[in-house]
Image 1 (cartoon, rainbow, N blue to C red):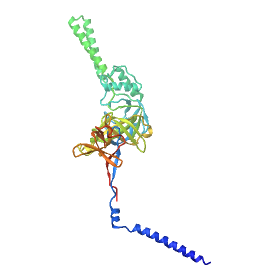
Image 2: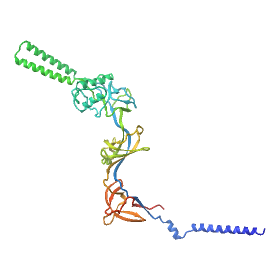
Image 3: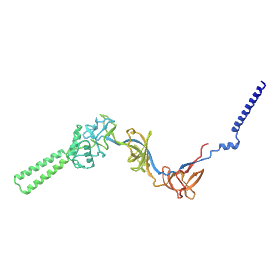
Image 4: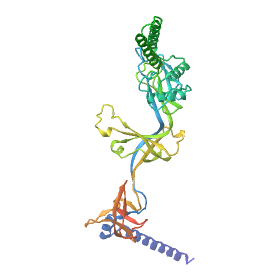
Length: 428
């Protein structure tokens, strides 16, 4: 019984000792000397920022936003029909989203057909018998693709081409417009008249000179009739055939309804493989060439590679002067190296076109790693064991923030070396 008070006193004493030690430690941390307070308030020492030396190509690139579309987009427009006051859509042969093949009827404008065929040259004139040219040759191939073959000389609108045109129209219940029939009748009558005159002269035993003149008249009439025959027959009126570079195609947009007055656009056809299409500003576009390599980054995820297929100048924004170059640009089409699946149609993309690339061996460092000494030498500073040593370099090809460098001293710079690119002052 006499030891219990002593034990209590001992416990109380130990608690007091621990409390005082704890309070003393806390006070030591809370109460600082003026020198310590100044030291703590000073900004942290700046740290050195470095980047590794690499051995890879330096590229110059141009980047722009784009979208995945079919390679060909053909806008079908209505031409003013002859003999009518207004172009009225009287029939729609294909609905939006439907597929069309060679020889299909797209629409009817004021009772005249719009028929789709394959070809890369847009129709720019009415094609009639007797005409020649690359557009006539394309017409002949297009007719064959629609199942109506010709045997005229290539590029010559002859009788079999006229017959094939008529067959294409009649297949859809239309009569093609014809030309030259009146001229043929006149030429045939001239032949008959010249023949009768020659016959009469022979029967009356006229003098040889008169017979010779009559024979020459008949020959000229027959030649003129032959010429008339070559220029008579079914023709293709401007706008009644729609040439599309690749078929089958899909109707991607219909702009009018049956009964509407059509002033311009009727519908749009999309065809061909999927490509990536985007517009670069005028300044960037000047650096891009057909065939340049490109990287494509798709949203939300995905990537691919390809090459610049073609380019077309974009018009200035409506109501703005064309001289304002920042409002204009060039639309580029990128053809992927591997075909894109249908799921990518309409996807957004970021295109990075490689416009130039370094050649040969050499070290690559960030441009910010290169500095110039007072004597004009070009240096990079290599960090090793906390110390930065200068290495003299010769600067070469630069692009996208990197530069190719070479050294005169062997092994003074190696792949993986850390070179100084700046300092980080940190934050208070």
